Image (cartoon, rainbow, N blue to C red; front, side):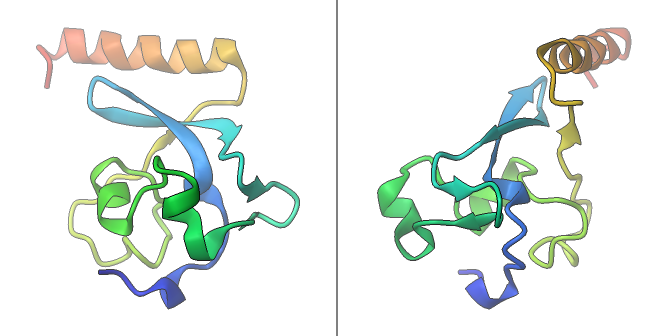
Length: 109
C-alpha cells in the first residue's frame, strides 16, 4: 500500500487515460471529482468509494497513470509515463494513429 503523503496533489493522474496498443495516452478530460482550478480531488478521503474507476497507486503504475516526476514512480525501474495528446480530438486521434502505425511497422513490439 502506497503512502498518501507522497502525493503532491498535482492532479495529473486524475485525467482520463486512453489505452491504445498497450500505451496510455493522457487526455484533457478530468475526473468529475477533480477541481480543475486547484488540481485537488474534492472527495480525496473517499475517492475509491465515490469513483470506482479511481485507481490505486499500484493500478496506476501498471497503466502509466502518473507523470514521470511523480514521487510514486520515481524509483520504479522501467516506468514509462503516459503519452500526452494536445487536448484536441484531432491530436488524440493523430497520436493513436501514430502508435498503431508504429506497432504495425515493428510487428507489434
